[in-house]
Image 1 (cartoon, rainbow, N blue to C red):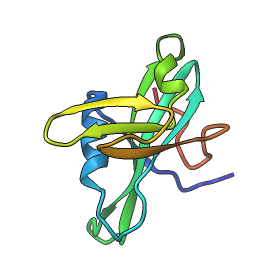
Image 2: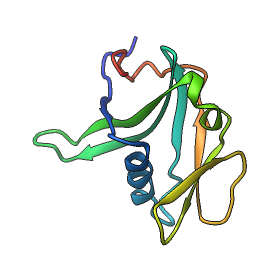
Image 3: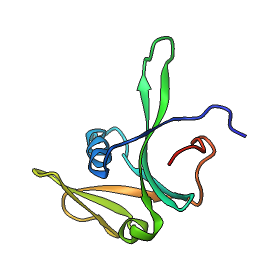
Image 4: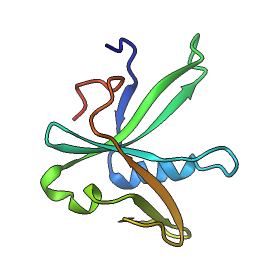
Amino acid sequence: MVEEKVVPIKTQSLADLIRLTASTIIPSHGVTYLIKFNYRNKVILGLLGVFRDYYKYYGIPIFYYYSFDESSSSDITSANYVILYSGEERFEFSKHPKPGISIPIVSLVEKPAFIPDDIE
């Protein structure tokens, strides 16, 4: 059992989560990706991050996320990428990378133990 958990922060909209994810993309600093899993009849899409140098802590692990009803999210459920079009705030879900910024989505079998059970 994992005792230390991330701090879950639900974004107001999917667009907010995508904008935040895009802002973390820095060339030559590794890959930015979203994780996706089903939990309590919801599809959870999220970004793991660290809130650095918070008072005496080296960093607080954070999980920014947005949730969808399983029944209304077939395009999200089957997607492998979020495509963000530069120059405008427009995005779509896709099975394959496309021109624009292609953010990979990693599908997990289940909710990781380090994410609290009270996410909605």
